[in-house]
Amino acid sequence: MISLLVGYLFWVSVAVSAVSIIYGLVKKSWRAFFLSGISFIPAALYAGVGGELRLVLLVPVILFALAYVLRKNRIAQ
Image (tube, rainbow, N blue to C red; front, top):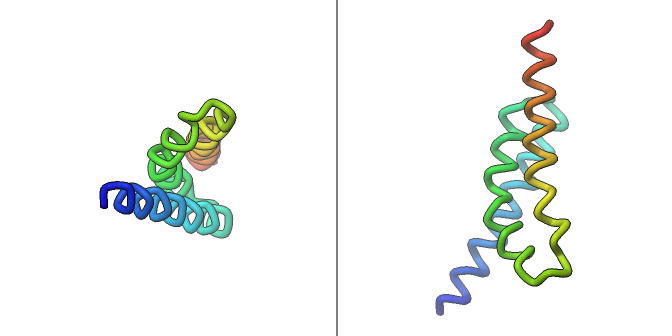
C-alpha cells in the first residue's frame, strides 16, 4: 500500500514538472521553471538513490539555473 502511494507521488511529481517545463518554454516564465525544479526534487531524490541514475539529480539544478537566468534577464530589460 505504501509503495503504491510512493509510486503515485513519483509520477505526479514527474508529470507536474513536465507540464511546468513545457509551459516555461512556451511562455518563457521563470516561475514555471522554478516550480518545475521544486516539483522534480522528490522524483530526482527517489530515482538518484540507486547510484546509476545520479545524473538525474542535476535536472532540478539545471531548472533552477534556467529560472535564475530568465529572471535576471527580465530584470535587466
